[in-house]
Amino acid sequence: MQRRNWITIGLTASSLFAHGAGAADLLQTYRDALANDSQFAAARAQLDAGRERIPQGRAGLLPTIGFSANTNWNDVELKRPTSADSRFNSNGYTLQLTQPLFRWQNLVAYDQSKLQVAQSEAVFSQAGQDLVLRVSQAYFDVLLAQDTLTVAQAQKKAIAEQLEQAKRNFEVGTSTIVDTHEAQSRYDLTVAQEIAAQSDLDIKRQALRQVIGKEPEALKALKPTVQINRPEPDDVQKWISAAEQSSYTVQAQQAGLEIAAREIDRQRAGHYPTVDLVASRNHTKGLGSTSVSLGTSESDSNVIGLQVAVPLYQGGLVVSREREAAALNLKAMSDLESARRAAALSASQAYLGVSSGTAQVKALEAALVSSQSALDSNKLGYEVGVRINIDVLNAQQQLSTTRRDLFKARYDTLLAQLRLKAAAGSLGEDDVQQINALLEP
Image (cartoon, rainbow, N blue to C red; front, side):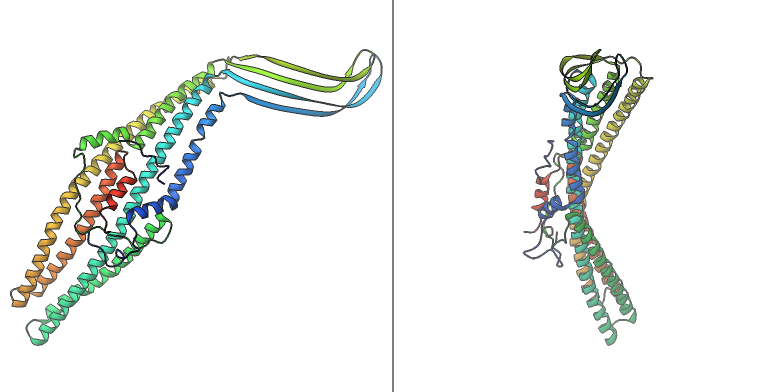
């Protein structure tokens, strides 16, 4: 499973929103989210900030140059060997260059900076995968809400026809008032379900708007005959192994462990001497004195040499920080193990979601055909007098429930496919394109 470069990425159709030349697909919705999602934008900015760690770490190995200047007003009174008063201005400047020759803590910090950038990139890649999942979840939530509303409307229409038929049969004396009351009750219930479905659709569209940063367009639905395949490879252990090695969360924790291990060396370096090359130029101008007179004095000096500093005792600070770093290193080991276990669990759950989801979709497709046949049979039986009105209503309810469950199973299985690839650290835009191909043209 190769890491994606997230920097450069920049079922039956619902009659409500899924049709029309202006309908947006999943890929377009995803690209809108890439450009407008605030969480992803924050992750990108965090990556840019994290990449500055390398130049900051490198700075500890490069020379530093400092310049200082001064000017002073002096009021001097000389009493011996002769009395004299003098008021004058003195000034000067110092230019100093310091080049570290041996500072072990700076070398370790530079190595840590590279690992910190790798950790930032892993975190950003995880944010990219999270964006794919959030967009897909919001997209399919809207489609499911649309399908649920369509099913509720179709069910209301069918029950309304059954209600009218029950009323006619009661008027001609071929059925009792009970049939009319049963049909009226189911009709009222379906009206309430339609209102709830419309409200849920509005909520889901607002959730999608939050991700893409604008009002969502009409969305393309899944093809009616879409086929959802089992995971490839169809081996849960391979997915678990990939997740334990390639998950971006694991990669970030692995980098964190290496940073923590180097931190022990960096803190231990507090015992080591430091060696610097120091060069300076000094210029001073003021008033000089001899045993008998005062006069203007001006001098320049150039100095170059080695400066060695040996820490002897700092009150136990270095030892304490070294113990702290060792404890944090143990914590990082535990965090890495937790990340691996969580990645394995996510991969296992997603794999089971795909494998059981594909089986559930096939079962519900067969159940949909059976439910339709059962409804047709009950309608015919009601017309010839071998079935009662409640049988038809129940068959109609079963058909609607099966259709809604089928829609949901398809969306859940597709999302499980994306989660499985995300757990293994291989989710990217090409996976969005693959699912996008399952949508209506």
